[in-house]
Image 1: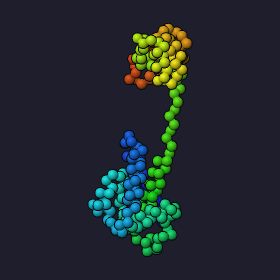
Image 2: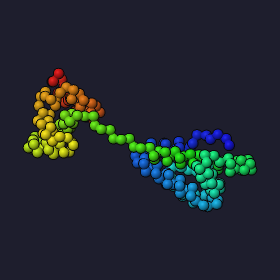
Image 3: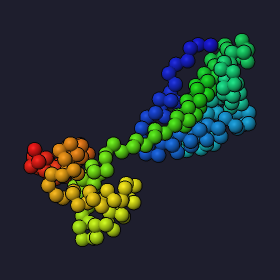
Image 4: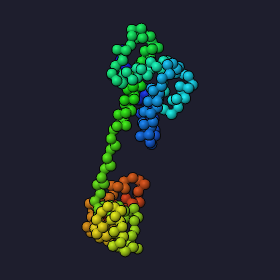
Length: 218
C-alpha cells in the first residue's frame, strides 16, 4: 500500500470550520453524515449518481473515487477496527487502479472521521475568572455610565452586590467612592488596571476620561 497523502477531507473541513460561528454543530453534523453514508448497504453506486450527490448536500465532504459503495464501507470499517486494510486485499485488487483509488479514499475518510471525533472530544476551555478586584469592577461600571446616585445607597448597594456576587456592605461603601477624589477605590493602581479594559478605540472617550483622572491624581 502506498503512503497516504495529505488528507483533503481534513483540509477542506478546517477551512469551512473557520467560516462558521456554530462550530460544535458543524462538527457533530459532519460526524452524523459520515455515519449515515458508511451505514448504507447498497452494493453498488456510482459516485456521480444524483442520489449519491443528494446524500452529500448537508455535509462538507464530497466523495470522488467511490465505485463500489460496499467495498468503500468495508474498507472504512475494517481500517477503523484494525488500523490497516492490506490483510483483506487480494493481489488482484491491489493491481486494479480503480479499486485502489476507492481503498485510498476510504482510508482517508476513516482518518477524517477519527479526527472529527477527536475535535468533538476536546474539552471546552474553562471560562477564566475575572482578574478585576471588587473596587476595580465598581470603577469600570462607573466609567461605563452606571449612576445610582438617585437611589438609596444602602438599597442600591444590596442590589448591585447581588448582581456582582460581591459583598453587599462593601459594594454600598464603594458606591460612595467611585465618583469622589483620591480614596481607597480611586487609587492610581486601580485606575490603571481599569484603563486596560478600555484599550479598544471604540472606548476612546472612556479611556480619555480615565487618563484624565489618573493625571489629576498623580
